Amino acid sequence: MLIGVYEPNSPGSYGQIDTFAEQAGFTPRITSYYSTFTMPFPTTFAEQAASRGTQVLVQWQPRGTTNAAVASGADDAYIEQFAQAVAALDQQVIISYGQEMNGNWYQWATAAGGGSGSDPADYVAAYRHVWEVFQQQGVHNVTWLWGPNISYKGSTPLKELYPGDAYVDWVGLDGYFALPTDTFSSLFGPSITELRAFTSKPLLIAETGVSGTAAPGQLAGLFAGARIAGAVGIVYFDQAQAGDPEHQDWRLEDNPTNLAAFQAGIQANAERPLILANTP
Image 1 (cartoon, rainbow, N blue to C red):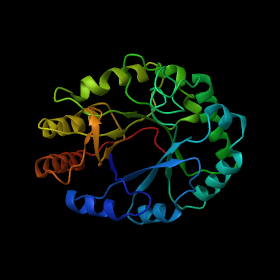
Image 2 (spheres, helix red, strand yellow; image 1 turned 180 degrees about the vertical axis):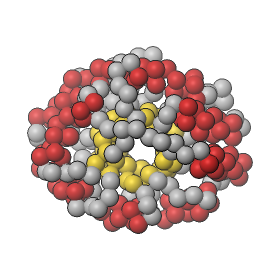
Image 3 (cartoon, rainbow, N blue to C red; image 1 turned 60 degrees about the horizontal axis):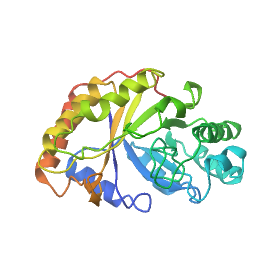
Image 4 (cartoon, rainbow, N blue to C red; image 1 turned 90 degrees about the horizontal axis):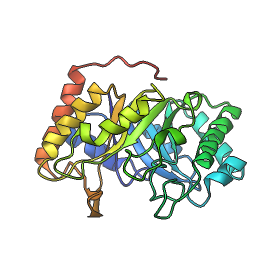
């Protein structure tokens, strides 16, 4: 599996990623960052990642616009400029448009409540349009990730939001071990079952984190569960958050026990090579 990380100063600096990699004793194969619809593609950051054998994952958030506007072509000038910058990079780039769109906490999301309420059809149309603009620009070095949150009571059914296999290379799932009783099966299992009812595209655990006394066992379960699920990789969200169970201190490097459990998962992954199908 491709083991990756998100560090909060990305893409402004690669320093935190290098520090994390040194402490964890491995080279991340994916480095994630979050981009609004005003930010240019960070070529320098992507080149730094490429020089380390790492792919950049762009979590592309349509802030300041809407799914309907994106689908209509209103943001095409910006999308075309971004696409051209990606094409100029001699490296595969992973792009996810509007992650966690099945929830209700982002303006582009589709579940009722919160600040969301976008029509699922508008989201699908926007995702497809972004993909089409990249094709028109002749961009061939993108792995297209479709990245919902794990399903919960009240979330939009995943099938309603799926752009279709022609537009997606990998499917992602975001989910955090917020409770001591959370396991890979209880957290990700129902959503994986839901996904597999309509697509067999490779799975990436695109955002995840552990916290608290149960963290070492949960990390072991994360690596084992992802392998059993046939996941192409795991991206760890290494940031301190606070405020509610979904926002905790997910950092590993400040907890030797958790960091050791992560290192053990990396080692177990390295010792069990996985042959992947349908990956670019």
